[in-house]
Length: 198
Image 1 (tube, helix red, strand yellow):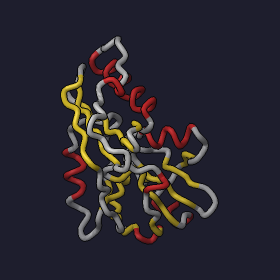
Image 2 (cartoon, rainbow, N blue to C red):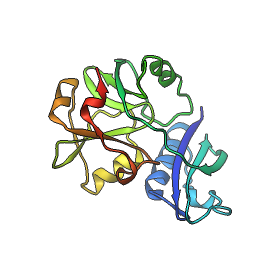
Image 3 (cartoon, one colour):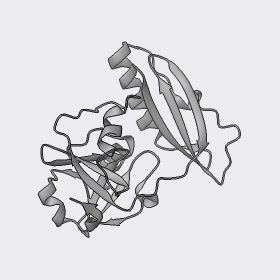
Image 4 (spheres, helix red, strand yellow):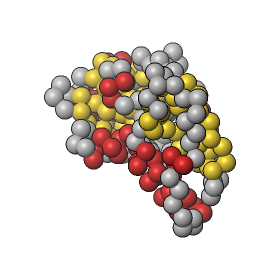
């Protein structure tokens, strides 16, 4: 079994490094019984990384790191999102096996991305966690498929609030953003809530 860690590098700084280290080492301990702690900054080469560009670092690992890749990052353009339902989906760890998402993406029709609904509750897109604004605060579903590093940091810093969000609750919000390791809130486009297609 192999897992992924995806990190953002900006101005030669590895963003949210502590959160990535925590998830990486927790996953290794749970699945492989690895007792040692690895600092990802020790295995990410920053040679060739330029100050004025954003990069994506892709780490593939099992008990040990299998592959480290760094390349310039260009975000996927998302305007419309389709609600799709899967009441059995599980993705608590960032596994390299993403077949379930590829299957669900076949239902997106003309939309750019999907929002996965599980037992009537909003979870994630195929590539990100979600945050929703009511005009004064930002909220995130308390039922994510994956508790992403960006999501964890924003909750810890009191910038977003986890709450129950069902499909019927969506009309309480005016906008949403996708967030993940590569998309902090300040870089993620804010989309009107009616860009979600039922």
